[in-house]
Image (cartoon, one colour):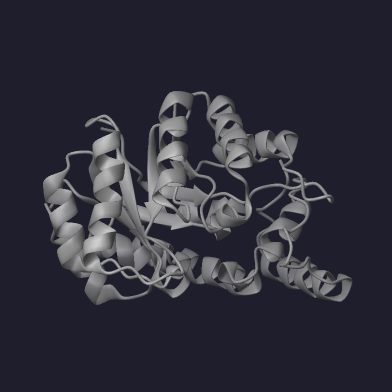
Length: 303
């Protein structure tokens, strides 16, 4: 079964000023990321403003990314929703639309105990073909519900289509525990951009990165240097990447991503309210910081 690996980019969802989804710029962004060398695409997750989109909008974005990618890289559609019913609808749509797999965040906002979390993922796994890959997605600082090692282990051992997990909290002890599940088979990726290099060194398969949706180049370089044994170069590039991660606020406000993409020729547009777009003053400061970050290398152009 196909899996996520290397630089998996968590994509923003381009919107028009009226907050309608922008399919034309979604296509442009998809091609841009593939041409810059990312390994996989992960649209409609946290970076993609998932819960603020309607089911119909999520389906349209999924179809556009899958169609545009045309099998050049793996596309895993994030389908997690506030109800199991909606999650299953999106999961089956992703399967029918030709996705390589799906990811599903844990139940969110409302407290869910281990039994409820297991039942949620059990229903997803049982409703899909046994050879259609599913990634668990643990981001407890946003969802409010953590995926324990015991729950993840039980799910991985119980269902052949649950093939991995994206873990977006910077806890290396739990990351180590996840890596002990079916070693060599169960796929583990960090969701913390600043931890790509140490996560690779621990044995993770890569990163699901939001900042790489704006500047994929340094992340691709980290991966290439690491796998070619150039550890010092990889360390230097991770430090370089950490600077742009800080400038773009590491995804704390997706408007930084969207407005920075404008500097690269992608009109990712507005945030969906109640989140607000960056002020003109903040945008000017961000652009100056990006120019200072990039001034020594001049590597990151629109082309």
